[in-house]
Amino acid sequence: MITKAPPVGQEARDALREAGVTRLATVVRRYTAHERAAEADGLVRDVRDPRAGEAWADIQGVAREVAL
Image (cartoon, rainbow, N blue to C red; front, side, top):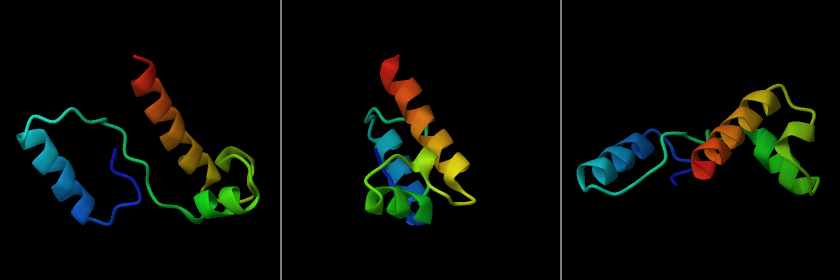
């Protein structure tokens, strides 16, 4: 899984796809909410951050894909 990647992350995803490497469709975007959650030793869904909901949605997307 490629996470916390700048725009070059898309290039890496494309290269993996072209090489036939299995990868997740979900992208975990980089938010300060992740850092705040780590500092609080908790989950991103529980931190007070305007982007925490979006960050949690990314994590849920990964979990859904992995569960398949």
